[in-house]
Image (cartoon, rainbow, N blue to C red; front, side, top):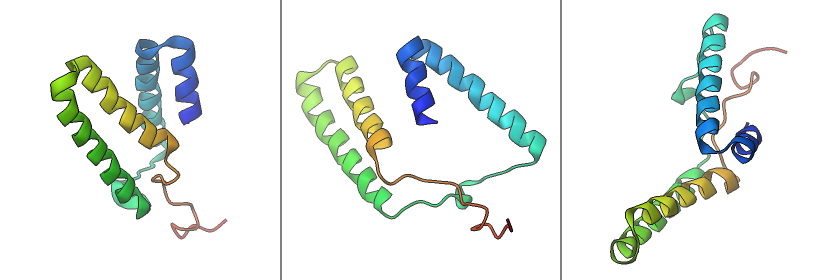
Length: 108
């Protein structure tokens, strides 16, 4: 999914990517509703390492905010924070995932 989103950004730019993601989200909700599928946050498997990565990202942002108040414009500060979160999401070896069918007790 992230490859699709990245490719859409490369080809179409930020505005078009946002529009397409909204359409994709709407499609997902519509089809999940038809199928009767529901996944809640309690269904997600969140690795323990994720909290460490989040804490590191928050520390980087706090450092940037302190430096940014003296040296950067609001737009530059915003872009640096976006870069931190983008790096966390795209480079992170630990991510949240939905449980598999076997984890949910389903039979193959």
